Image (cartoon, rainbow, N blue to C red; front, side, top):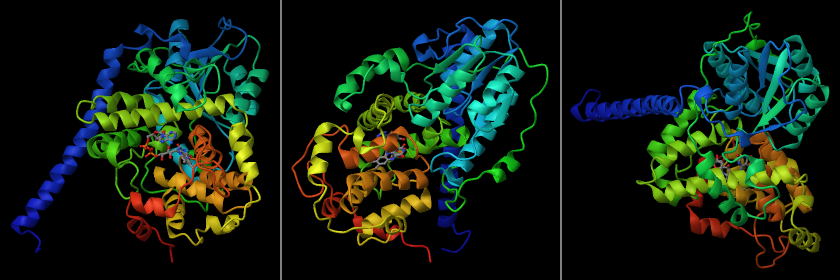
Amino acid sequence: MPRGSGKGRKERDAGREKEEAEAGAVGSLEAAVREARSRAAPSVRDFRYNKQRARLVSRGSELKEGAECILYWMCRDQRVQDNWAFLYAQRLALKQELPLRVCFCLVPTFLDATIRHYGFMLRGLREVAEECAELDIPFHLLLGCPKDVLPSFVVEHSVGGLVTDFCPLRVPRQWVEEVKERLPEDVPFAQVDAHNIVPCWVTSPKQEYSARTIRAKIHSKLPEFLTEFPPVIRHPHPPPNPPEPIAWDACYSSLQVDHTVTEVAWATPGTAAGLAMLQSFITKRLKSFGSQRNDPNKAALSNLSPWFHFGQVSTQRAILEVQKHRCAYKESVDAFVEEAVVRRELAENFCYYNENYDSVRGAYDWAQSTLKLHAKDKRPFLYELPQLEQATTHDPLWNAAQLQMVQEGKMHGFLRMYWAKKILEWTRSPEEALQFAIYLNDRYELDGMDPNGYVGCLWSICGIHDQGWKERDVFGKIRYMNYAGCKRKFDVDQFESRYTHCK
Ligand SMILES: Cc1cc2nc3c(=O)[nH]c(=O)nc-3n(C[C@H](O)[C@H](O)[C@H](O)COP(=O)(O)OP(=O)(O)OC[C@H]3O[C@@H](n4cnc5c(N)ncnc54)[C@H](O)[C@@H]3O)c2cc1C
């Protein structure tokens, strides 16, 4: 088609109109969200805060005498708005007429995290710092382990009350314990579950057996907890001095993490980009989520997991927005609520109540027994970690899924199950399989090191939250998946042809 011809121009104009409409839609989502927040209340001061979201970590419940500020130690929920922990801290500060400060402790290494994770996180935090500055709330980036840098910061700034968010995983829980032990005794310390819609400790006091047992518990509490957020407002009590400027670029280059797993281009870090992804999900993919989410060749998923994982987008916000489309797409909206609320909060429940959440010892007795019974079964193929990591197995679908994860930082959800189950089939023992799966998942998935990841690996390899199936070699009664089954579900050749080794 020659440039400038009538048909070509029409197509380009139509394309541009579509882009403008989508850009406008993103703008309209932001505007609608802002309006919804202010409809909920002008500020958190005028809002009935559900106190079950917060719990005391340390003794003193009275605010410290002579305090000069309230501090929100941001950990998992790296956003300003739609954040119940931030709101709780601002409410405390408003009541006491004190300045509010926010800090984040940047540890030089974290589990299997690489620059892919740190880059995404730091760029998101930079946006948080800018947003805080606009609200007269200083943001401090503290370099080091929380126990080493936070208690001294509390003393130096005469912090009268400390608030943090919640993560059920071992390392962040240990940070909270260590800070609690080193905090001055008269500084009360509260924790808010800002990640789950129904706070993890409210949903259930024990480990739930499966989605079947937790579903009704969550749904019965949604009317109470799935509410609109009030806005975090410009803080009327600014601190006496502005915070030290943050040398973001120097921080970035000082990180002691693996730089060979590079950042990904498709996922722009930060809340604004995350909300744009939410908007594109609603306008383009939600309609097919219900029927096509298990087809890796179709664009039907939300793709929101990186922003959820880093807390840059609140799942509660995503649900509030997606639910507005229930009349048009009931099947899809219900399926999304099942994944993003029930399955996700089930994973949080498991990691919170089971200290062996990343070990075969965390599995149910029936699963441990069946795996043990089949531990000596002959494996059809045996691979070492490098062969798996380099995607050089005999199975082109598995290799393609592995390459999707390595190259893009996000493997399709359906393939994650197949991928992990094959690792069970091709390694020496379930323990080794789980260790390899968690290592690869946490190293390459942008949403890795998340309760969903540990539970996903344990579901696939150790049958957690699942039932027993027909007994077979290696798997015992753990649910089996194979290549032929995938071929029946989607065009495997098409997926394989998309991912090849880079020359
Ligand atoms: C072996 C294995 C490893 C996994 N590793 C991770 C991981 O490291 N991090 C991670 O966030 N998820 C993980 N999952 C769960 C799931 O595959 C991803 O959450 C999903 O693919 C993310 O893509 P999305 O945001 O486009 O999902 P969507 O399908 O659009 O779902 C929306 C949200 O619902 C939640 N969700 C979806 N599926 C599940 C599930 N099965 N369990 C719990 N929550 C779910 C996630 O928060 C997700 O972002 C894993 C699953 C398996 C089987």
